[in-house]
Length: 196
Ligand SMILES: C[S@@+](CC[C@H](N)C(=O)[O-])C[C@H]1O[C@@H](n2cnc3c(N)ncnc32)[C@H](O)[C@@H]1O
Image (cartoon, rainbow, N blue to C red):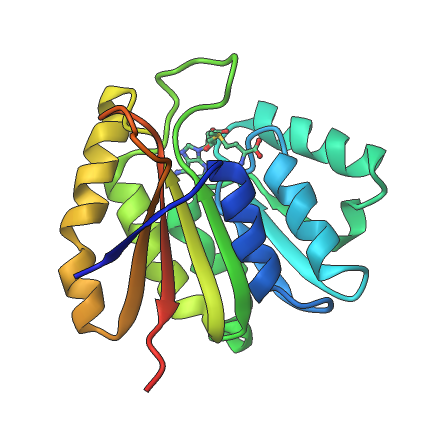
C-alpha cells in the first residue's frame, strides 16, 4: 500500500525531490510547461551539459516558457515541444529510454487562461505510462494533482486507482500531502523503482 508522507509545502517538496534525483549533465522532462517555472528549475538542475524536454499543447504556454528561459539564459538547455505529453516517446530519442532522471507533471490548466484547456485523464494516464518507461533506474516521476476542479478530481481518482497495478509492476509510490488537507487540496504522487 502506498505510503502517505506529510509535507509543509507542495512545490518545495516536489522541487527538493527532483533536485535529489537529477544530476548535472542529466536528462529531464517537464510534461506541462505552463509558464515555465518548473522547466527553468529543471534546466538549472541539468546544467549546460544536460537537456530538458518541455511539453505543452498551448502555444501561449510554449511562448511564455521560451520567454522565461531566454530571460534566464537557459534556453539552450531546453527543447520546447508544442505537443501533448502523451506523445513524449516520439520526441525523446529511443536510445535515451531508461536514462531520464526526473519527469515532472503539474496537472491542470494554465493559470489566468482558459480553464477548459486542461490536462485530462486519458492523455495524463498515457503520459504517465510512457514516463515510467523513460525513467532511469534512480529516477523520479512527480505528478502534482489539483482535485479542486472536476477534471482534476477525475485525474486524481484515476491515478490513485492505478497505484496497486504500478506497485505490482515494481514501482514505489508515495502520496505527499500537506497536513490537515481540505478534501480538494492538491497532492503530490511520486514514482520510483523499488530497490531489490
Ligand atoms: C498547471 S499548468 C503547468 C504549470 C507549469 N509547470 C509552470 O511551472 O508554470 C498545466 C499546463 O498543462 C498544459 N497541458 C494540458 N494538457 C496537456 C497535454 N496533453 N500535454 C502537455 N501539456 C498539457 C496546459 O496547457 C497548462 O499550460
